Length: 466
Image (cartoon, rainbow, N blue to C red; front, side, top):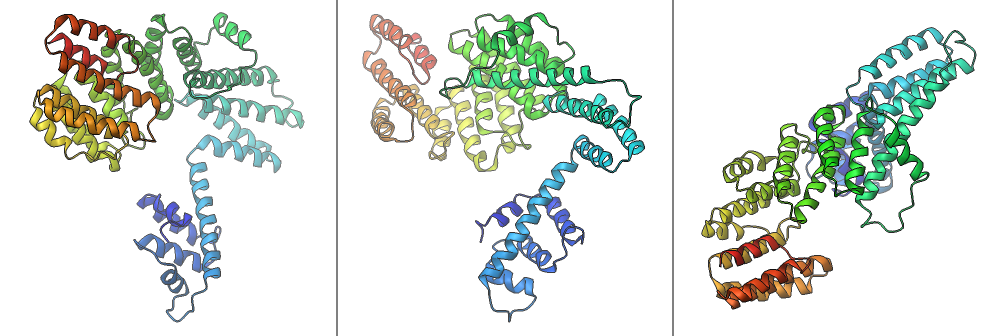
């Protein structure tokens, strides 16, 4: 019964939401069937619900003969009510949406005085809104449309014509949303094939160049994001983007602000990959900003990937004390199913940078190598640790097993396979060459001209310290 949709959806509710849902069910406006209330009570309080026991509970007797068809029917009805409850809750979380539907209803009921009152208050609510995202401009458009509808039905002739305002709100919404998703498309152009071209692209881009949208922070930000994606060699676009993010981050939901910062982080990563090491500090500052503002958290949780990226950057900048505090303070906010692995793997990395190789190996033995986020990274860290310890026998044995594992893995992309195989191949070469400076120099050049390689920077460091 655990896999049933109604059970799964109920389990996704918080404790408070479950209480509110029961109140919702007990209201005769939404439900008048006691059996549905009883079923919801049973499913909420029972950890491992069973159909037969649920059937007896809702019929309030153990003598009722189980009827699977009747049970399926009552569960489907409960699922429908639960979906309606979630829609109802989501709707009433947004006062502007509620007001828009209320305005439509009042207009249909010919309640012009009350309609005007709600329209004015909604207009004020919109103007005072801290958020200036695409949803905000959509609401502006809908409100202007509502004013126009009143004029068309002849009940508010004294209102000034608002067609220019409608067109202005449509333009703002169009520019914002088009820019936003054009940026996402540019960012994913290597993932998706046959992406359709933007209509009127040249005119669109020309318009942005010659028009000022200082009043619309979203357009400003996405315009600069677009420039970092299309003109990535000019660093002034990144500088401008970061300044805009710092100034206007409060105008967007955490979800959208997080996406905007990811664009900025991706620009830094591209620069770092090109060898522009000054962007390590820049991306570290971005990570710290998203932590301090809590933008990085999704549903109050930190993704294992974000946690790993922050640790990796701090370690490369040799900020070991900061990194230790970060791991200690934030590992409990990682998605629960990845929390333990994330803590052990990233602490192992810290130990590696501190040259505490025994501690590193001990923690790596406790990592779950089936974890998609940490399995391969943990194996790479093992390779590096064996090398740093000069345990070349253990290193060779591990390379043999890891090599076969990579070659046989059907879920690993060819790019990732090559990256790991190249790493192991060069480690072997460096070990066999020993201290021969001339050969090591040739290997260094070979590494620079080979793509892709996992941990190429570390390989070069190992050659330079020989």
